[in-house]
Image 1: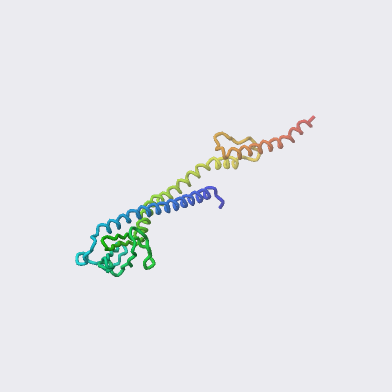
Image 2: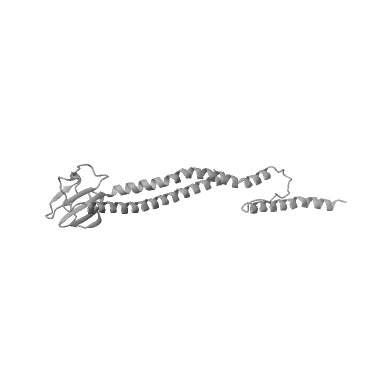
Length: 224
């Protein structure tokens, strides 16, 4: 069925979904940027707070999956690995300082490295932690949008129906007329979008009325 109400509702809801998708992507990128700054600061502080020489006897290595943890490694001045927080996932030594991104075993890692008194320490964190945090924040911020979309859909359906009531009233008025009724329709109070249609219909009724009255005038003139 070719319904104006349904078409308006469909297009408006599609527009809201597109806008919500754009807003979600924007929120994700903003949250991702904030998460990157926060976690970069975190791994920097971890690297700077560690002593120059990490005593393996003091800090115990934890050989677990570091999916949500930092991988801390330290080498002495001779380049010997002195400590690795996760030996099974130990990253290679990159010989850089500061913050940078690397790919290890097919996954991106964010690393902060510091070199002091010959020792070299690097703290690595999987980027998936940041992406999951950003996605979670964006999703939580979008929940109100998804709740509001059905409510807005119902409101749009009601508003469009109310807006089309004058058209329904005109249709009812025309349908209720008998064949000889040629008086014009009432145009007062009609929305400006409907007034041209009703005006054109009234002009048509006026022409029809004149056409129907013409034979009567001829007959009257011809009568003795």
